[in-house]
Length: 246
Image (cartoon, rainbow, N blue to C red; front, side, top):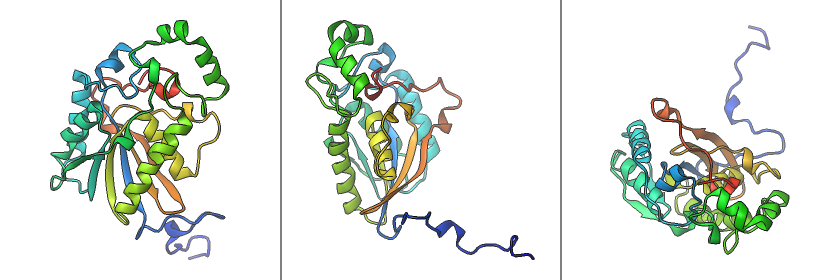
């Protein structure tokens, strides 16, 4: 066997140059799930923190995810306290090993869209043109009228993830939340997201994103996995964060 064909021991444990991966003995692996399609998703309305239920399609999406995760073990299950996320969480949790209780956390709520809640994009273009122009110029720091910016969301839900990480060192945690918060999890795993990259992160309903978060580092393990939806209607991708509908 030549040197080029010899197996390399522990190849998967080698850290990229300049980066030390999280220690799995103390880091927390998060499976972060976006909620199923809601009734306002189907109508193209901004939701933010409005408490909107799942649509019929959303219920089917949650059932498909539940079937996929049947028998899986998680040390804890958390959800945004908004109904569309909590409904998705309850449908899945009853099929998990245990089953574990579902714990609500308001820090996992979607971005607050303020005055945009309940509006469709045509309404927003008519009533808030200055906001849309500001959003194009600075999608990170621009606040929704009377609501939050992506920067605000990152600080709020980032703190929620940090609290859960500290609570479950070395564990595996299932989180049900929203498209904006999934993007925050990706940012935490990557040490930030380059400017204007948020809109390129497509997050479909009930997709799974896996991140490993340590005290000072993180790793993206998987993103937007929606294989369980192959036999269903295409999942909704648009959301409030992208300036469309969530």
